[in-house]
Each structure stands twice: as C-alpha cells, then as structure tokens.
Amino acid sequence: MKNLLNFLLKFHHIILFILLEVICLTFIIKYNNFQRVKFLNSSNAIAGKVYTDLNTVKEFFNLRRQNEMLAAENKTLREELLTIRAANSNVLTIRQLDSSAVKLIPAKVINNSVNKQYNYITLNKGSLQGIRPDMGIICANGVVGVIVNVSQNYSTALSVLNGRLSINAKLLNTNYFGPLKWEGSNPYLAILSEIPYHVKVQENDEVVTSGYSEIFPEGILIGRVVKVGSSKSENFQEIYVQLSTDFNNLYYVDVIQNSMNSERRQLEKMTEYE
Amino acid sequence: MNKGPVWYIVTFVTIVLIQLLLMNNIQFSGYINPYFYILFIILLPISIPTYLLLIAGFFLGITIDIFSNTPGIHASATVFMSFIRPYVINSYNLEDQEKIKIPSIMNLGIKWFVKYLLIMVLVHHIFLFFIEVFSFSGFLHTLLRCILSSIFTFVFILISQFIVFRK
Image 1 (cartoon, helix red, strand yellow):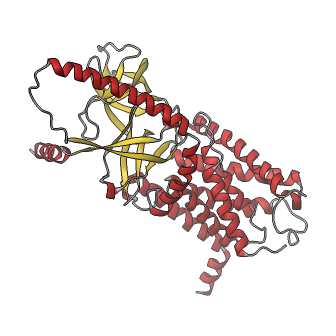
Image 2: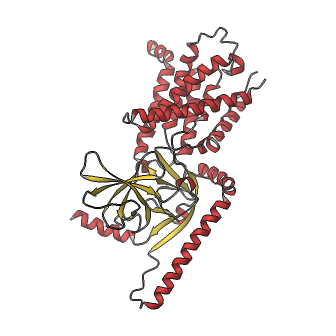
C-alpha cells in the first residue's frame, strides 16, 4: 500500500497527463458522432452571447458591402417578379401551388470559418424561432449548409466547407446527379463525383441541388463547373465545381423550413421496411 | 514581483479574447491560423507544480475548443504542451532557477527565449494539426500547414513580448 502511494506520488504528473489526454480523446472521438455532443459547442448560451456582441461591432464595418449586396439581390428579384407577372397575364393558372409548403427563416451568421478541415457556422436563431436540426441553409447566392445543433436562441451548422457534409447535387443541363463534397483546402472549390463518363460536361455548366434529399428543395444553385477530371479508382468523372456562395463574406442567410418533410419522411420510411 | 491568482485570471481572459477576436480572423488561403493563446502556458512561472500546469493547459484548451466547435482538439494539444514544458526548461540547465520566476525575454535573454518559444510552438502545432486531421494520410500537406502556422504564431508572440515587456 505504501509502495503504491509512493508510486502514485512519484509519477503523479504522468498519470494526470494520461488522464487528461484520455478525457480529450473521448471528446474528440465522441465529437466524430457530432450530433451527440450537445453542449460543448458554440450554440450554447455564453458563447452565443459573446459572438453576438462581437458581431454587432464587426457588422458596422461591413454595412456598405452588405447594402450593395442587398441592392443587387433586390434588383434580380424585382426583375424576376416582372417577368413572372408578364408571363402570368398570358397564361391560365391551372393549379395554385400551396405557397405555405416551404418557408424561409431569415438568420444572421454570427460565427464562421473557412480555414479549418471541418468548418462550422453559428446562427443567431434557435429552436424558439422554429429551427430544428437537419434543416438546410441557403443565401442569396446559393447553398450554405445544414443545421446540426440547436439551442433556444442559437444554432450551429455544418457549412459546405466541411468534409463531413455531402450534398446531393445534379447537373442542370443533363439531370445526372451525384454527391458533392468540399475539396478540402480551397474555400471556393467542391467536387461532384459519381457522374458516368458518357455524360458530356462542359465548363460553366450549372450545378444545383437535386431535391432527392429532404434538406434542400430542387434547383438551388450550388456553383459552376470549372474543371472535369477522372477519379483515380472508379469509373466516374470527377467534376470540380466553383461554389457560388462566398464563405469569406457571409452575413445573412435563410433557413429552409419544409412542412412537407415529415409526411415525406414517413412515406419513405414505410417503403424502406418492405 | 509576486503575482496573485487575479493577475493570472486577467491574463487568461485577455489572451483568450485576443485569440478569438483577432487571431481567428487572420486567414491566408486556408493554410494559416496563428494560435496565439499558447502564450499563456509559455509565460507561467517556472516553479509552478506540474499538476497545476497540466490543469491550466487543459482549461485553456477547452475554453478555446468551446468557442471554435472543436471539443477536445485544442485541449489535447495544450495538455501535451504543458506536459513537455518542464522537460524543455530542465534541458537548458538554468543556473539560478529559483530566482527566475517567469520565463520571459527580460529574465532570460532573447537567445534563450527564442529557442524555448520555437520548441513549444512546434510541439503544440504539430500535435494540434495531426489530431485535427486524425490520420497520417496527406502527411506532407498537414506538415506544411503546421509549419506555416507555427511561423505566424512565433512571430506574433515575439512581437507581443516586445510590446508588453518593454524596459
């Protein structure tokens, strides 16, 4: 017993070191199942508050740029509205679309990074405002990411610049679809894979969401093709996509709330078990 | 010059804030992110007991982790760095270890401090970047990111020393 105590005293720092490292590794490994870590992230109250305060200062210096972006967006929307109005007057409306099916919740980005392997975004809206995990996020220019954790007033999300996020995308011209993932270091590049060789892909082709996953509705812009290459081992093309969203300059986003999702999920679950 | 716990808490908060508000906003092409916060571990007194050093390292890392959504990654690196620190200091055979309280430029001279700082920064960054990637594939790519960030951390810490500890 005395020997044991002596041993513990003599090597107490090594034992403490191993103990602390084990705690850290548990965090890291648990974090790989990232949905499980509910509290140790920036959607908790204190970290959220600090980021909000910091953001009010940061925002001030970006007002001019944001105004320009909003004005540009307004212009395109107004143009679209005019075209639709003009078209509508000539066409007999056959079916009124249920306009309440998809709703957008506007939110502000209060924390964001582009230089890590796994980048996350923190938003200033949470469960009280109707945000739930697995909702998609878009901005004026295109796809932004997917919500993972939600607290009462804040939420964190995987951005497209995160190796853990794969988005089902398709080529607008040919309708061929495949998973789209971040390239890993350049914040403007992603890779669309699993497109067979016989599909002709050209530079500048638009890549949009496929609508096969319930997170994003169909047809939201992701980016444009910049380079077509072949993957090393598989019989597929590897398509480099220039992302349309500028993650270095991301302030206002919209979270997609799709009320048809629960019905769809139920139906798909039923078919899965048969 | 005996500094109480309050002084250390204030330093801790200041250094963490500098890291979050300034350093995390420095980004060059996705490669470089200086981790200035390790300055806190570097400046702890030489006579500090090892267990306290390890616990301080753990809390520093976990604080940074909570703010950057990386539970455990920074903490494991700072704990490792705190563990190595006494061995690095002992290897230099300081003559009057008892008299020198804080390992700073003023107390130890620039040559010594640069050597000490360089080792500590490299130890921390190499551990951090490989834990972050969690594999040895792309070894050279990770090493490059690691060295580039180390250079920036090193320069920032050195500059801060000249600003704070002016004679």
